[in-house]
Length: 283
Image (cartoon, rainbow, N blue to C red; front, side, top):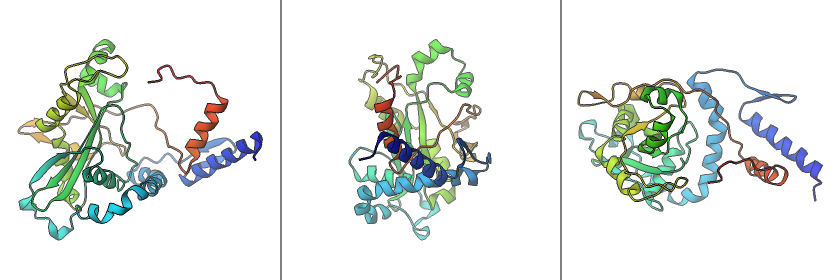
């Protein structure tokens, strides 16, 4: 059995290995990496996390992979002049739910599972029943300066109205449809009537977890942020003559890289045993 000192030493070594695997440099107690901002470097930084998510998902999806691949079109199965989009809301424990998860595993950036309220959608091509793309809406981050200044609300107004905002935390097309700029079609679909109705149906009679209040389920704004900087995917996306997406600015603050290979779980166990809890709101 390991002594407390050996457990700490083992955990420290695991943390260092995980950081190096993600491309970080360690010199003494300093952790650093090159401040390169190009998209290729950002993707490279996330490769380790993407690979680990694929490994963790294998047991749940491997048995259905042949069926899931059947929804991914080959180039010769797509007829651009015959594309007919069909929106499908994803429900838990369905083949669509597995397909959504499977497609997300092939993103170059690790996809969050979202939090709070969540709605997921797939877009199929009725011409061949192949997957065009997907998107998911979840609760927005409470404090985003660029968004709040663009809207022009104060703290009181935001507290009352943020309920009517959802954030697209997954959004994109899959190959080969992505070659036809189908990502713009997916972006446009986030604001369609079917999504507003799905939001109203899902959250019409639900009380907020923390405040306990019931509010009218009107979805009035969809926001999104890009992990790779400003994206051309949202440029010139219009309904009739009206722009659907407008750039509000850039987020500030800081981001984080997550530990994998069991390191996060070991850190959590260590913290629960050795540290005092500081959460102000357990829910």
